[in-house]
Image 1 (cartoon, one colour):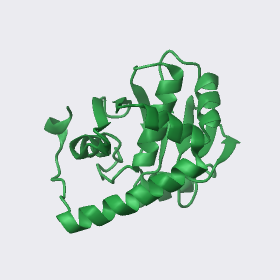
Image 2: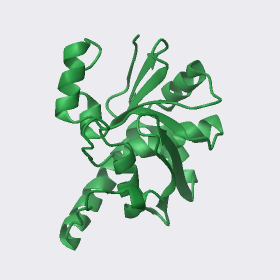
Image 3: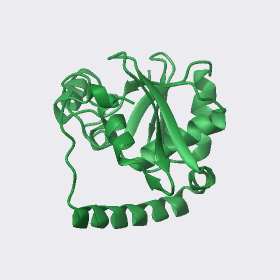
Image 4: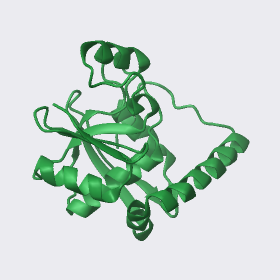
Length: 196
């Protein structure tokens, strides 16, 4: 577990707010199941869902079960949020559970338990603005800023294979960046593009 690396306290919502959040989240997941059938089927079949990450910028690793007994595991979500933080300023934001389910479905389709190499997870507004100023390829309001996107690669799997699997799941946006050696995946609307 990555708990020993957590530097900032994790806010715990009052029980009433948690129930409201979970009921809203359940509705969003039900909508996602209708819009993204391949992804929903993959997630529904797993009694537990786990992910392994290696953050290329910080050198931190994490392997955790983030969903078990029919619910997301809050401690694991906090650890994932921290590992996928904006490494430039250590700002942490909640990563959308749909993104975690998409990443799980990708690793499941690839038949791998190797860690996902993380190039970019959450981006703070300041970081995104800086990157946007340097490149037309960075959106003014990237889904990275909402905890709904990640740029990844998986060792032992060709980038084209990863790209093909991500597209097949129809879980959201998929960007293919062969020169930069990563695939962008997000849980926004379904779309595709190729970058540098």
